Amino acid sequence: MLIFKIFRTDEWTVLQTEGETLGAPIDLSDGYIHFSTASQSQETAAKHFAGAVGLWLIALDADQLGSDLRWEVSRGGAEFPHLYRKMTMDDVIWAKPLPLVDGRHQFPEDMA
Image: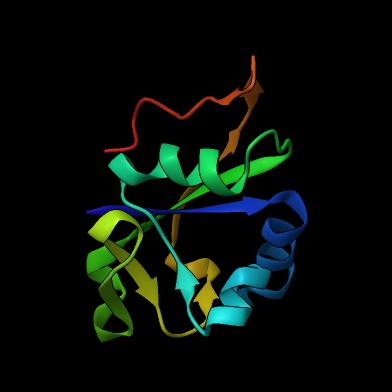
């Protein structure tokens, strides 16, 4: 199962350059890296990245993250995946731009 992280361009660049990251400022504050499932990603973008340009959608395989990935209740009582370790480039399955078109982020069709 793929899970997804939305990064700003500078956050994505750090991961590519350094090979690892503890995530975005919200992740550092909370002590884990926030992810979303395919069905949760659009709401995450709308809630936390409304109007933002220069975003990237990063896909990871949840099954490859082992016990450091925990599913925890969050927004609306839904379980969200949280990673309790650094995210590495080795974790990344793919990364794609997340363009803003007419005020909405356009997600790739092959997210599932």
